[in-house]
Image (cartoon, rainbow, N blue to C red):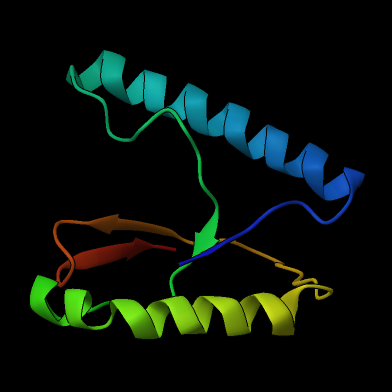
Length: 100
């Protein structure tokens, strides 16, 4: 997972609006269905991949630490511009749906 942060004040304002709308939507969902659908904290990120199981993930720990260091060096002065976002729902790590 690569965590994302606003690159400038304009993107920070947009992110704040997203967070506020997300909170409002989650609250409406909980009022209607009686249970929360997501955590209160919003952590924008890009998933680079998933491990097949816990055993493989634990055996990959050293490689992930090395990748983390390499990514920090390579991307430290880079920005990514997103033109849109997509909404996904996960049942588990193999079963998910996308809302266009």
